[in-house]
Length: 158
Image 1: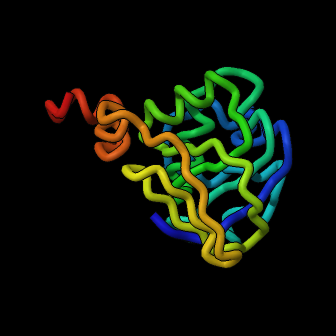
Image 2: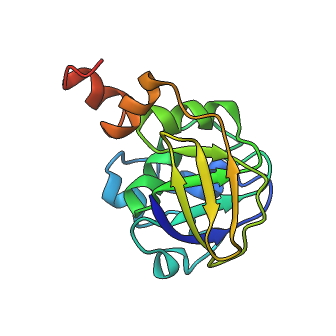
């Protein structure tokens, strides 16, 4: 996967990713329409399908809601890169098929990055740096490629 980056700070919580006032729906399109609006009102204008969200430590902290990774995925985010993730966000993201990468790579707003989930490589094309990360096990690669755990199970891929 390849795209440009939208960079945010530490402790981006689920209430910022998708504000609680929109939790009366699970419709991905509706959630996408309000994704990140409390932290970046121009998020959807800046985002192109396939782009990456990059953040500091503890991305996805706060309340446990599957709506947060679903909103990011439905908005067109292909992957989230952060120095660390809240554990429940980590699991929820993988369960809905949103790839996440733990990395401390130097990435700035608008950098062009490439991620190879099978090989476990992250490349900042803009800065000409590459980093390895532990690739997901085959089971999780299947879940991600299928668009989530339910799709994997319904499609008989697991």
